[in-house]
Image (cartoon, rainbow, N blue to C red):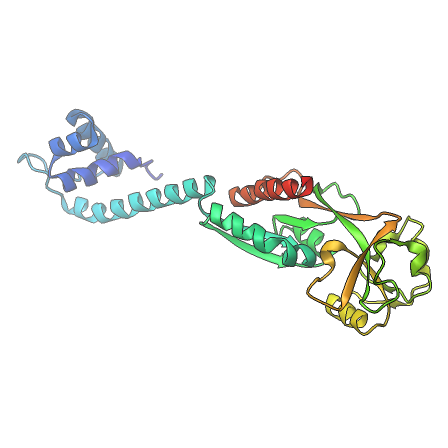
Length: 296
């Protein structure tokens, strides 16, 4: 059976050698000399061999002691390194957080949010992935990421969702479209025009505007392709405001006033599972930042 070796006596042995003797080590460690000697004797008994030569009044290592000392240093250094790293992670000074977000949030909100987070927690590494809402949900559920920023379409007991943002739905069309100069729109105003459905079109379901979906024959899930179709004047579409890419100068966003629809965005995490310290810091940071933005 292996002996149970304590770390403190190993530190005493190293201090005895570095300070030049038992008395000097005791002063350095703020311990009594008998206590130091007793701890070293207990270590020798557990090992079954003396570490120091007997007599002579000097701290001279035995051959076995010479073999042990570099290994004691390695073990003590490793212990201290693990402790420092663990404390740094626990205190949110180091670590890593994996997060996923829908593309509109990843491109529109996360740059400023992550810049602020890194300024506050410079030692934490961040991995950000984007994907459609179902993909974000799946990544959180499988543990590929700890946090997701998305809309939760269907309740799931395995996931915890904290709503933060309300993203209004509007109509997107080209700047020369007959609807482009309107300040707000009723859903019936879209009936004469080709509606291009996309991944967020399900937000119209359950509302009077759902009638528009039954007459739409064009569906495009990719935002780049959808934008190209809109710029070509093929039709109009509905999107949450955050998903509207304002850098496309030829496109216009007109709020859908009747019915008023919105996408609820929030933070997603696995239910009943603790977050890592780094992810916990990110969670509370995003809750504070996005919650304040919503209030404004």
